[in-house]
Length: 546
Image 1: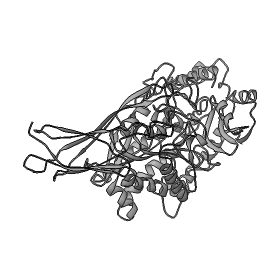
Image 2: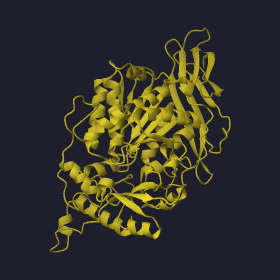
Image 3: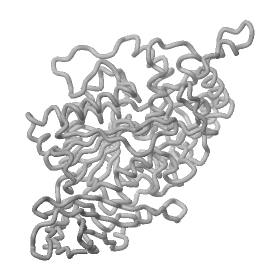
Image 4: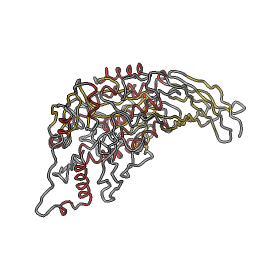
């Protein structure tokens, strides 16, 4: 994206926000010149290493042997030719494709609706209202959560927490899933919220669903990046107006958040008219600043000024570090891929056997392709690499959509897309509960007379997450739970030693600090070393009066 394009976008966005665009056009002019068409192409790769030359382009998260898909913005074709690349066109005008999809209508009637199925893609307010409605309708199994940090444009970020007896902080393992790190990837949000409907509506009729809700705490955040999603989604709300009043400078294909050159939000519009954005999925700490990201603020893979500089990634970090997220999925489009760590090196992750095995099992259920992230193209600062590196969580990126479905296909394709992959979601949610893939701390809190104490429990550890430069970012794992009225506890945790290295060795042996406390008693703290599949029994933890 060139500077002139940024200026044009900024001016048009500002004019629209103020509602005076027409008055500011030159006398006799009816509209600003239309931009070149936004194209989707498959770039041919002379070698596997040649993809590293494409860091300044808007690469899609889809590839096939010898090719990688990319969105070509104005001027990109000339830059590609200068670098010696050739390509074939998949879509000559992405926005025209969207307009045709809109004109054709949303969905058709189906014999049996998928969970949470609608007539068209949700808009941002729909996500909040639907999550609230689910939490109200199933109050014994679901609660609405508002993530701690509002977005740059002042929006709240919502999710839903699902578990039988959802208000019991009982140490159950957590399955986490999110969508829409990238604004234009609308199916990622739909698939995530449809899983919420699935778990709640089918609880009484599906034994697998019941097992998940009974034994796992599921946390779902359908839209991680509300600002970017709202920009993209609202560009196709009828009536679609001609440029520059409607799809201004490819807003339907906005990818990043709405970080601005200057962080100004116009109260009248709630939008930053001079946004250039940061890619939230390059803003996580692990190997931040390396291959597959950019320090150029206009790049589609701009990584931000520092690890976790963006509220979107900080919100996800907060969930993962404060819960025992034993397995997780972050949803994207497109390419029908199941990506596992690592994204920046071909060296296998320390848990490659486990990660590959579960990825391959998901493939048997949805027909996707299972591969390490690096097999797509190099990336650093991504969600699943960070979650795995920092906490040992079994973490994946799922890219949904066939090669002809692209970023946001007609909504009528979404229910079948969900039904195709729901069993893969279920498999990983069940893996989150499987004690062979994580650890458990068990025991009983009692007083000096052996009577049970309903104690508070905390599992903590300070960690240093390495970035590309060799420095590290300090982070704190801090997981809370509570013993039962009988004083017994069973707290599920990831291994205490993290897979922080990509060099093939297990890294340092690390320990948690496990603290048991209750009002009127002196707290007790224990160092705990625990591995996958291991149960550590602390026996009776005797609390003495303070």
